[in-house]
Length: 168
Image 1 (cartoon, one colour):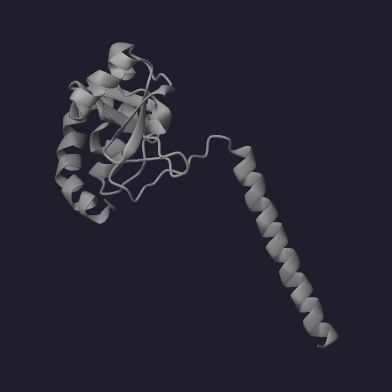
Image 2: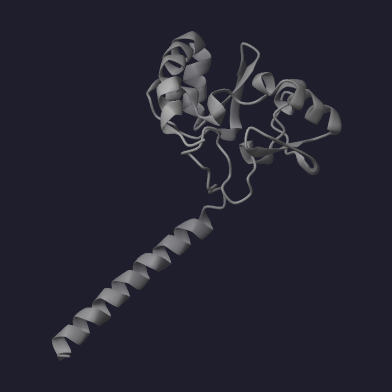
């Protein structure tokens, strides 16, 4: 091997290592990165199997806040593990997951209205028309809150097409 070729290989290796170190730095500094399955019909954390990051879906309604569920109060439904703050919330959810579960599978309804399946954030939420909606960012929540009918009309029209592209 020529000296020139060896030098090129060393340079490629250095570039690859710098890129890898940059990726590690970005991932370690972003402690809120969640590996959500955005090709699923329901947004689920790929590493834990938890829906809505383990937050209790019933607590949004009963406590008017996002509350982390407990592992001792879990249930499996819709292909995901759901956590709850107490046994009553678990029972309420299992009786009516269509009411308490996030609409559009936990995808941001503003993004769904644009035809994009963008995972919602369990901490950016809104109850509208007695249904739970999760949003990717506060701007989307605020726009939705100002005119929910507009976004719901478009999201409901686009959801069946998006749903067909998402894995079961």
